Amino acid sequence: QGALFRGGAEGDIRQKLLEMDLVEAVIGLAPNLFYGTGLAACILILRQRKPAARQKKVLIVDASELYRKERAQNFLDEEHAADILGWYQAFEDVKDRVRIVSLEEIEEEDWTLNISRYVLPPIGENIPPLDEAIADFKAALKQVREAEVTLRQIMEEDGWLDQHLA
Image (cartoon, rainbow, N blue to C red; front, top):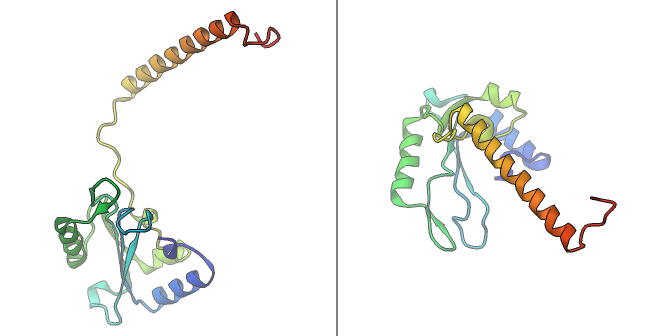
């Protein structure tokens, strides 16, 4: 997905395509969908004559979590493709997945189309309450300290720990 944010000639081309209002959509796909590369791919949809409702706007889609995992490869199934097509056709915001971004905002972001700049990944729904997280952290820290004491004792008993470091 480097073409979405790299500078140099790629950045100049991307900026020109955006200024000419030719970029209709950017769709970020999951990694490891194509043989020979584990990188995440992206789709740029360019249209010379956008419908009036889509002018001066770009549809940004984060489809990076739409895949079926197999042993050595990820696969984009028909239902995943249908979701992406539906989002493209609807051309509206979808929480944590799709965002309509104005060309003005893209210009403010120095013409980058980096998907994570516009569509934030969903925050895990299994986040524990703060007091529970703190208690878990303290318990884990206690285990680490106990393990350090045990390790130090073993190293001292076996002569592995220099007396000057003890």
